[in-house]
Length: 353
Image (cartoon, rainbow, N blue to C red):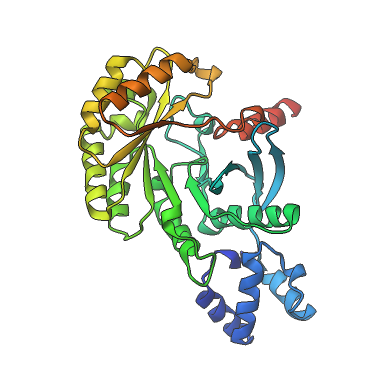
């Protein structure tokens, strides 16, 4: 059986070519494109004839993702989503509420193969890469959800920090970013997008040549190679020296500062000596450190060190003139951290088999 064409992952000019080959006028492509950007299916495209809607539904897919479940935090309004893909795989996302507007956390893979010790997304490995339309689909379907719920509104800020390693799915991620930024599409400024990587150096170097002003976020989580190797297998391939050199090159080529994510893990990476070493590593770099209170990963016996240790670490970095903040904890009551809700759902499914 011939695979259906996924229209939501196409640029307007590509849809125009498709519609032309199907014997339809150019203006029809624009109509279809506008409906797709609103997260709508063919049956809802009311300015198309019934014949055309049926014709499109037979050969094409309008939306490649649906919200399977949504849970809203009673603490801070954070909303967690479980999405179902066309093949039945499940991914997740989080909409975080800030005073400057909402931010959506976007997944780039089903699961992850990077094996970071503190991440729930990687516990079951990587099933497959997401396509650009599946990444964009997360945004389209959440925008629709918001509009259906509140009557208006859409998201303008995005972080590629959901399940998966973006640099391990490089080509599809770049196409997704181009779709996101497309003036004929959502027209989102890439300055409103953060891309998080565990530190795949070749990908960082490639991204620096793309001319895309995204904010690069590095999952660092350690002040040296010895500790980083305990937490992140990728450190065995790319040492801190090589990684930080690539970050400096990125800053030089893009003019954008780099964000270093640092999950605070009890008895592992949060001593004052660790803070001193981290400050020495980052001295003179146009960067910012984001301290993250660890979401406990009981499967691997990793826990947060507590507020006192986090505050002391943060003050030590400030004293060393390193720009630093503590990440606000969001969605604690709804398993807001990456991979937690999906893993809970998969565990429930296994227990019912």
